[in-house]
Image 1 (cartoon, rainbow, N blue to C red):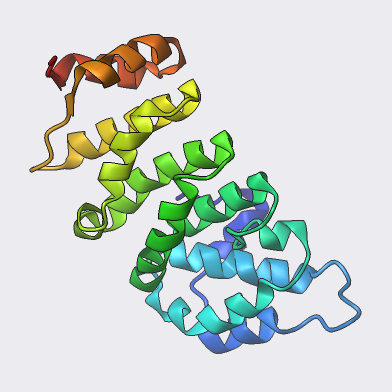
Image 2 (cartoon, rainbow, N blue to C red; image 1 turned 60 degrees about the horizontal axis):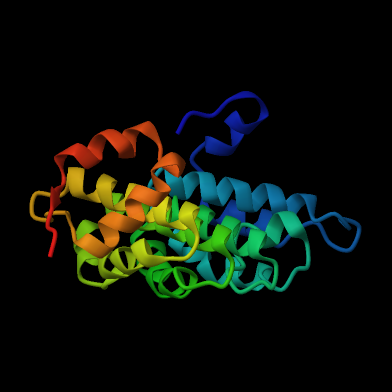
Length: 212
């Protein structure tokens, strides 16, 4: 991940003690939670750089979930009533390449794959592929790929296209997974082809389609 402009400083390798002070700092005068927001951004940036020391701040991050600030909540609250916040929180967590957080993403991800909001389901579908990039054995052993397959029958064409894109991405990077499409899913995919990216459209030519 490349850092540009004012965000460049966020990607300096941080120390747990210093970041904890920043995360818990600000006091009552900081009504906009500027200190906490900056600290959280630094922590997320360090996690994306695989700084495993950040795991020690997990409990401090959980405490911040009680703060009713949109920018903070969208980084972590996957149970918020606002679907946009749920989706953004999941997307943020899925980019963190730290084992404890990768494992912690699986359970809420399974829930959000069945979310009532199509935007959340779409985001969750893409996050499965991102999680596969972090730990393919974890994903293969957690039934997430089976859940992606079931999403090919979703009522929303954008969700179906997203699930298909995620499956294609996983399929192209896996030495063992073989992607096949039965007649029912093939019929649904034909209907949503206009919503698929060119990448997915071209990849479909290499999939083994089984019609029964």
